[in-house]
Length: 168
Image (tube, rainbow, N blue to C red):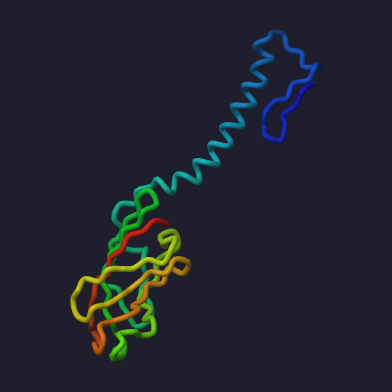
């Protein structure tokens, strides 16, 4: 008698005897259907999160970090594409920016797993106050201010809004 192989498909032998030819063919059709269904279920579980539309979320996607507080967040994920806007306020000691504009990365927030970009991505500031450069790191989800207008001061209470979009 035949048997199901490692792929889940019926393999006939000369000993396969069924009352009708259609019964014999149904052995193959049934095992093939079961194998396809199992494969589809596995594939669907991997594709479904990429097709989802979360709507706009206002909590749970970004957490504040370092000397920054989080005012608001708006995030959406549709088919693996994230759009994010966060309002941040600096609560630490004033930072005086050197003449070259480079500062040690000032960690300000962390993006939750499942929302992080595949590659490091720049974030666009709202343009208020000193000109900032910010980015979101792919693997850690850390959002950091990386550079500021040369000679500027990031004072306690300074607020900015950062926006960005990327694929996960």
